[in-house]
Image 1 (cartoon, rainbow, N blue to C red):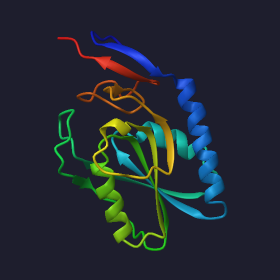
Image 2 (image 1 turned 60 degrees about the vertical axis):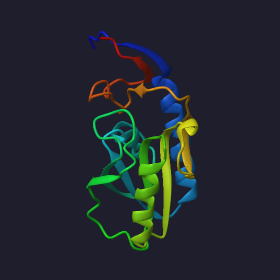
Image 3 (image 1 turned 120 degrees about the horizontal axis):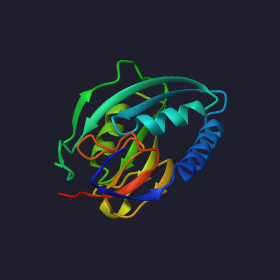
Image 4 (image 1 turned 45 degrees about the vertical axis):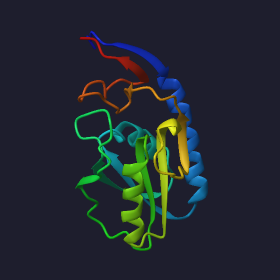
Amino acid sequence: MVTKDKIKVLLSAEEIDKKVEELAERINYDFAGERVIIIGVLKGSFMFMSDLVKKINLQTEIYFLEASSYGAGTQTTGVVKISKDVDRDLAGENVIIVEDIIDTGITMDKVMEILRARGAKTVRLCACLSKPERRKVDIDIDYLGFEIPDEFVVGYGLDVAEKYRNLPYIGVVEISD
């Protein structure tokens, strides 16, 4: 990939793969013998979710939800917008929401509230990354990959202006002019 931006590797592809394996093992244990509905939050979670579901040995159904409080910028607006919803009844189901990063927690708090209100038996949260320093809403992450510092990260599904989602690692980017 040709770029003028400088990207410093924060988490290697190997570190990520090892953590995804651990998270899948915990999910397999927690839901042994049960079905889980896995809901990926678009767009950022697609790579993480793909790797994760390949390692889950349970009966699964996969759906996507698009929700954001960021718009085109890097700072939250505080207003959660759901632009693609799950087209399945979740009543009585075990739901695992798969998210790329928990930053302020505002978006995920609202999404979890909505899914619980639909009668899901359980609603669990699986996040690749968490930035606890930025949290504005207390949120429990049931399955967490990594806590990271308050830096802007890209790669492994995360982007800046739709760039760098395809990187196999997670890096800190310095935008050049």
